[in-house]
Image (cartoon, rainbow, N blue to C red; front, side, top):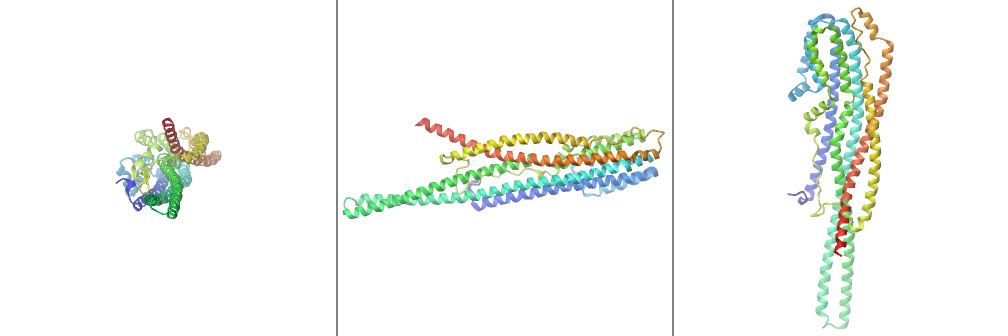
Length: 478
């Protein structure tokens, strides 16, 4: 059965269920992203612990390294996340790199004190920094995402109010129409009776019947006026409902197509690049320690090269397809057999709609200009931030010279100027990051506003153009 033929309670229940499903899905999205952050933090903790233990075990040669590898491999095999990823047969790039790193460790047969110091002085602090960045950015991204979800649910709530208002005015219109028809029937009966008795009735009775007929005509005029007023209110309420309906559907589409992608990108900002840079330090150290291990290191390098936030995001969408799939659009629910399903520009409303669309058009042009400027600033800030994250702070080219002792390496790793430079860069990075997130939030808000305005503009433009065509046809016929 078509949706407009359903009983009112069924339609209301259908709306309520659809809204509940969207709310539940939005909640699941937040939980899913929180789970991903927790998983990454656990991944970073595991890698940090792994490298710390490996630095110690490097002095105990190959048998200790084998025990370490077995320890973490067993931990992974017994974890719930391991089984989930294995079912997918397609590991996320950080996880894949982690597995490859363990395989490489199994092949190591000896260690070096220099490599141990590289792990302790550089890799572990880098992973700690990544964890801090991840925690900070994920929190900010979550706040932005919750605000977007709140705005979306607010629009849905407004849609419910518009629908109820439309139903109320449509009921009033139907009632006024019913009363008008009753009055018209009574007027027709009185007019017929007056014609039958006019010739044979006394003059006094004729005047009394004419007076009764005038009262009946006035009643018809009064109810016709009431019906026209209610009809106009109903049209305005229906227009507002349809506008809200289109606005909600467009914003839901915008959220699921654009906002979710961008929010995940914001949460992921710099993570893959930082992991890649960290692992490249590891690779450089390993290559200098023993060239004979090149074959196993190539496997690790391949995993590092595959660090890709877009690919991981696509895999995440595949793994949680139900959570991130776009819900069905809200359907127009006409009230009590109402056959009008488009925004109308009736004569009494035409000037109001024209003024409204002009205002919306002006706002659209302004929002487009402002959002485009914000987008340019956002792009430039993103590049600056990625440059800060990807800066090379430590060069291993001279560290592994044959004449260089462990003591000189420790001196290199603990150099005060290096620490000062790192602290300055991280402070600059956080300032740039705060600016980026503020611009990112402003950009999402602007795009959401454009989406809402465009949805209203399109419907109003269509209604006004149709009205103009109809007026032109009527004028041609006259």
